[in-house]
Image (tube, rainbow, N blue to C red):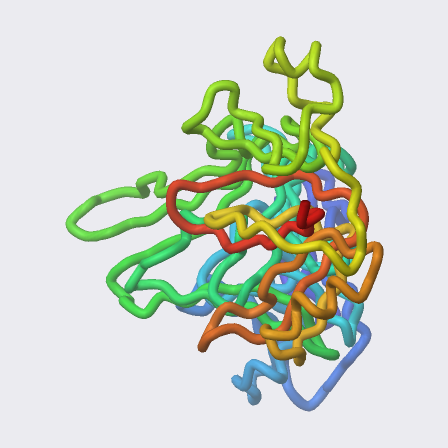
Length: 336
C-alpha cells in the first residue's frame, strides 16, 4: 500500500491504486501546505505547516486507536464530537484488520465502566467504577510510582488516560484475543514484559457467582453468599455451581434495617446504580435507608476521607473479594 497526502487529506492506497482509507477532511487552507508528522509520543498527526499547536491538528491518530493505548492517549467519549475512542484487537498476529475483542467505555450504566467485549456484545470483564484513585475491578494498577492515572468526567468528555512520570520507563495497554494486557519496558530490560492481564483469574469471569454472592479465590467453592443470604438453589450450590446466586434469609423491614460492611470488594455492576457526588459520606446510610429499593452503597470518591455516594437498587451482581485492593461495600440487611 501507499500512504500519501492528496487534496489536503491523508490517503491510503491499495495495490490497485484504489483508496482503502482517507481522513476525509473538508477544511482547507490554501495558504499553508499540509504536512503529516509522527510526534515523539507516537501520535501521527496532520497539520498545517505553519501551526504546530495541538489544538490546530487537522487529524491525529490518538483519536482513532487500534489495539494499543499509549501514554497520554485518551480512551472514552468526546462528548462534543460524539467520538468514542476504544481499543480493538487485531484479527491475527500479522493481520491488523479488526478482530473480535474490544475494550470500550460503557456510559449507559449508572456509573461509566470499561468493558471487555467479544463481537461487540458479549461482556467478559468489567473495570468497576472509578473511585478517584483507580477502577475498583483492576487493583493491579495500585502503587506504581512511575505512572499516574487520569479519569475525567464532565460535560466535555468522559475519558481515561495514563501518564509516565519516569520517562525512562515505557508502558502500553494492548487488547488481544479475549484479553487486555499491560506491558512495561523497564531498563535495563531490552524488551516488553507482561505486567498484568485481564481477565486475571476465574473470579474475573462475569456472573460466575449469581446475585448477592461474591467470588473469593481463597475459599472453596469460590462463590460465597453474602452474610444474611442463603443459596437460591441449594442442590446446584452443593455441586459448586453458584451461578443462580443467593436470596435474603430475612426480608428487609425498612426502619429496622442496618448495613453489613464488606471490605476489599470489586463493586457490583453499576447498571442499577446511581451516584450523588456531593453528598457527605456520613449521609450515605441515611439516604439508602430512606429508599425502600436501595440495597447497598459505597463511597464514590475515596480520596481525602471520601466524598459522595454510589447507591444500588435491585439485585447486586458480579462482585468479588480481593486479598488487597478493592473497596468497602455496605449491603443492606434486616437488623434481625
